[in-house]
Image: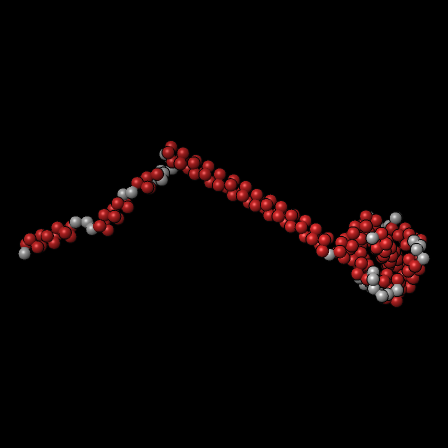
Length: 215
């Protein structure tokens, strides 16, 4: 009986496998590399090395961000070029509009808002083949940029420009556009703005007709 008791005491006093593994983990020298005393020279070198590593990582992250932005920007540029080329090849109507916008811009952009020129170019291209009189085409072309004008009033102003287009004359358009030489767009009266818009519309139709004839 005593032997059993002694054997039991001996086995219970021996450390189990779990206890040994826990003790081994506690005694692992991994944490010996961490500088618990910041005042030691080794600690200073340790922290300097860490700062250099973090600094290098920041530089790498910054360079990666910059390069990725440049890369995606370059992709956008390439895709934009492909889209424009595709539009030119597969959308002749859009090509005509863009070419007319460029011509109007080179002629009138110094005096007339670009948005107005783009609108007139787009509208003129849309209604060029419409079954309308020249006066009606001119009015429809400018109504978007002259929303406060009624159709009948614009038709009255459009008559001399329509007559000039039918007779291949350009004096009326030139006379209206001469108002821009010494005045800014905002300084023009509402009537002058209407006449200039109609003159630009007649110019746009003449350019479109000329392009069709040359083609």
